[in-house]
Image 1 (tube, rainbow, N blue to C red):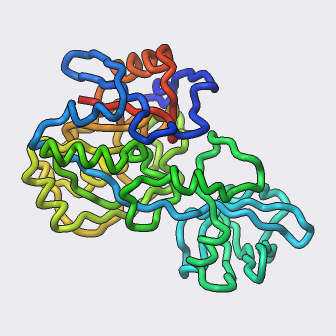
Image 2: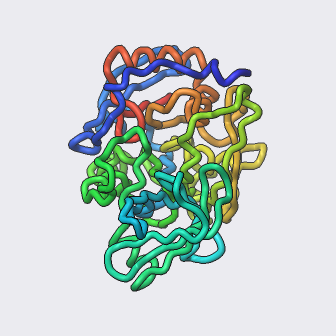
Image 3: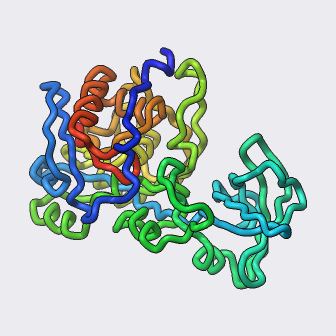
Length: 342
């Protein structure tokens, strides 16, 4: 199976640069797999598509303010994106931009007495950076960190700390800090949505998967099976597992919830509680064990996320759905609209 089979052409103007003004007023394409049909609706209509014994499974990972902007001793601006903690809470794998004129020993300064030092280059794109915060690393991130928006959302260079993005690039139920990219299907939920769902008898279970930056990157290998996913950590509580295993239908909110459930499931679909890590790669041909319905955003061409939805709903049906979404001018990617696959 070649990666090029999962490319599609998207007009640049359909890449959402800002979120919908009201979280639950984004558009929602409803895809019926059994009928091969599409409906163009709005997210606030979601409760009408669910049954009383359905269970929504959401990823409650909280996005950390992982985007930073500092200056070298020359005054040149350096932007960095935290990827994952390395040897200690103040030592991280990061992406740097620009990275041409940096090396081990380069110091990056922030306002006040906080600074960082590049200690090692570990790949063409990744570096190890040691931080020296003035008043604790959490306080440092709160003061200097910004929302780790993906590169297709354009912001003015050097302006990483936008209060609007810090608020909206976060689900209303985010709880456990650790993600460097948002579980974006959950961005559409408002407190009002949950009140309506509970009023109709639809229950919610929370799991945690800390989302890594690599999740959203296009697959670069020629063949799908040559792609390797980066490992991410997850946790499912006893209470959540119990809810999931007694539910009628599992409605996964986002591909991160899907990967969590499928990673923790036995061959019969029973979900086991506990902590773990996963590099599961779901592409067409995969047999789903736990997930019955999926709420998801519109994903980048040839990304592992697009392959996952193609595995869930079929490549041909997804291709037609995306063509319809482009025709109807749906908004794409992280701040865009969503799709409910029945």
